[in-house]
Image 1: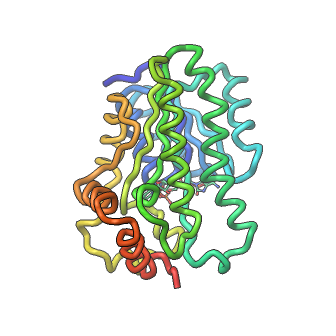
Image 2 (image 1 turned 120 degrees about the vertical axis):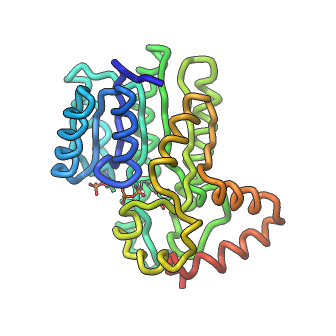
Length: 268
Ligand SMILES: NC(=O)c1ccc[n+]([C@@H]2O[C@H](COP(=O)([O-])OP(=O)(O)OC[C@H]3O[C@@H](n4cnc5c(N)ncnc54)[C@H](OP(=O)(O)O)[C@@H]3O)[C@@H](O)[C@H]2O)c1
């Protein structure tokens, strides 16, 4: 699959899954717009990918938890004459602890980044894709969006379930119009996610077979969006978990998630 002459925008491209999306799309020839807060990281990645793939790479340092940030990103690209063909909504983090442990500002910022931000970015870039008759949108959701809510990371599962449902609605609306929409639902993936939220020691106690490297997660997602798969769960273990949670009576699934998640999500 080649994306030469296409432009891809990746949020949260300074680390983890987003940086791997940038590398995979660059290897397929796409020009890139990399968005995150850490400009030094974006600059280093942009230099590396320009040199390796002879592509155009722009960086935009932005805090997407600020409500007008998507408008600013869109305006910059419009002024530069850059039309986005591939949108990877990926920026995110997790907030350990029970709901009342974190203040409202923290929850507000979380919703702004993980829910409103994804919806706003899509609202800005989808019309151009539809007008040109081509687009690819990937929302980075999670297995957490497909199973019962956990104790700790209270809004995380809800935000990821929102993305699954949002992708399904968008996919239905875009059917036959050249725009494919996929909710990528990874399970535990090696990245900086658990360092940022300080749960590395807790999740390190989990069995290694529960974890995936980000590269197969991203390769699978790019394949899924090309095939028009609306919900994509990478990896045999994650697929098994999702299957099991659907197969079990709902209260049983909820009880399992409740019991398990308390340990690694600081739900007590
Ligand atoms: N790792 C997992 O186990 C796992 C599992 C399922 C789903 N996911 C999802 O995968 C996505 C990527 O996470 P990751 O695992 O790659 O974590 P990561 O390595 O910590 O990367 C997170 C990225 O999001 C960016 N970001 C965070 N807050 C931001 C903000 N306010 N504005 C702009 N950018 C922001 C970070 O960049 P800056 O700090 O430079 O802004 C970074 O580039 C998230 O949506 C996460 O929920 C992860």
